[in-house]
Image 1 (cartoon, rainbow, N blue to C red):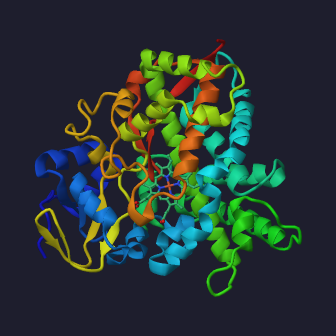
Image 2: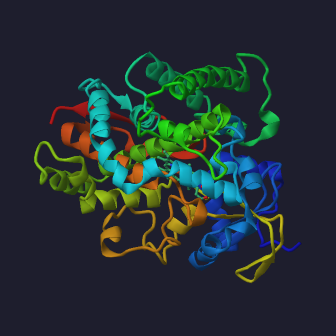
Length: 446
Ligand code: HEM
């Protein structure tokens, strides 16, 4: 089988490079081999990485039947999400599950979540102490985790919410560095060597979180007055085309998927947005001036319509996309692309990061310029932080809505300063690209 060219170094070396030095490794491959190349990752088929917009259009608009994501996504951690997650489904089953999970994430539902997101943010920022630095990524994780638990799970303040938040945060923090992240992707490392080992600790924390999730599922399933509009209530009430309801295991796996997919990426995106806003005083000034036009108590929907705020969020997702690649798609049929005839079994993945770094699309790609999104509308094959085609992120409207409200709330209530922005580096954390752990901001009075 003939693959596009790519680095010849052994799989192990390529895997280490991709995990510990992702951006540099991808950029080197791109410079040397162009916008289609093959990389080799330990225990996976050769992976064809694409960053050419025409080729990406061909992938996103192809018949979904020619891709298998069940196998492709085995790269992602089934141990974390569970094998019944929507991301491991294909064909009619996938379509049906998406239909079932989508209603709470549609644009019109956002109205309900707005005030809740404002309140959660306000509550968390009021715990920050003036003059005392806080770690930005974990503070943003706290906000996005509470948002998802309350808006999506429908949990109200109380013991179970608090316990679940603590357990899920500890579970995600287990994979907080690049080498620890590698446990999620390399099956051979996933050995339970007791509670003090990394994987053993993960399995035990996950078990405790599962127990709480099952308790909540059980309680809701037995609630004769179930009427909530959160995902859990809707998923419990939903029936598939055969009239079957979802089993507790299926419900658990979908909830875990939405929790993990729905808070980690948002937290990293918010941390990156705060990084750029504080790195570039003129961006911060423009943003504040725009937010202040809405007065001291803006409506959530008004905030989400601010054009410069929207451009800042888009430029953040362009320059630091928290997810570097779309899900890997494994070909089920021959697929001609960019002069190569790829054969069934090949893994193909559009690279979000490299496409967003193309100087022909984004002149001076390393420079943060929200104005590019005010001057031009990019196609879904040029700008796709949320992936594309039939797998496009289910939470796209929710994530963008959340980012804008949280940022506006923080910036309009506090002045934040930093002393070490030069030393902050991108770092793989779990499955997402986040600013390194030394990113702190200091709240000062406005
Ligand atoms: C800034 C935040 C987010 C980013 C950057 C992001 C990015 C992505 C990407 C790149 C994919 C893969 C798409 C593909 O392969 O074409 C994806 C899938 C998915 N995302 Fe998100 N996501 C975010 C937030 C969310 C939120 C808030 C939720 C839900 C609460 C969510 C739920 C999902 C689900 C369920 C899928 C799987 C879709 C499927 O397999 O059909 N994501 N996301």
